[in-house]
Every structure is written in structure tokens, then in C-alpha cells.
Image (tube, rainbow, N blue to C red; front, side, top):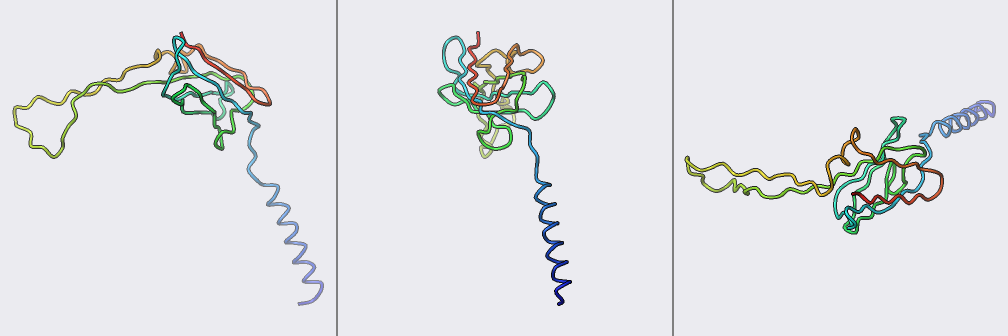
Length: 151
């Protein structure tokens, strides 16, 4: 291989490397968001909190821990939420009642159907829906602590 061809190949590899490096995934800026959710003064012990940017971009979510705390994630675990204004929803439910079905037991033909479990809202349902929640939050650069004390 001649020196001229070698130089051309090295130059092409360098240009290709610069091009590929510049084509990486570009994500919007996020900021750390954590806090605590309480209902009637007591921690909400289960559920999910979601921050929806008002501009319609990607929401941030978190599971609510047993002590009511949460830490939001948008792209990578714990990276927070995008900067700006958000609509916030909080859904906390559990299933109660119902008769368990034993799929291996023989069921007599005149058996009464199993009672389905019922959904119980641990916080009012209005907080779980984007169109009815009154909750909002503004996320700014740096660390954001957003506590929600639901009535």
C-alpha cells in the first residue's frame, strides 16, 4: 500500500469517527426530582407518581416507596424530569376482596362464580387522571424537592 493510499484511509477513518461522534443521542436536559407524597397527613405507601411536561414531551415517573418518598426517572434511573412546567398525577390503589379461583379444583356445575376483586383508591381518583388532577410542578436546574400533601 502506498503512502498516499494509507493517508487517504486514515483521513477517511478520522472523518467518519468525527461524524459518528457528533451523531450521538441528544436528550433534553433533566434535573433531579424527589419528594414525598402524603394523604391526610400520612405517607402514601404504594403507587406511582408521574410528571407530564406541558409541552407534551416525555414524562418522568417513579414508584412511591413505603415511606411515601419517590425519585423521578425520565431516561435513566434517577435522572429526574425535564425542565419546565408539569402536570402531576398520583395513582395509589389496591385490590380487595374477591374469591380466589383454584384452576385445578373440580367445580360443580351449579357453583356460584367467583367474586371478582374490587379496586380501592388509596388517594382520590381525581389525582390519578391528567384531566382532573389539580397538581402541577415546575422543574428548574439543580436539585428539586417536590412534596405533595393530598387532601
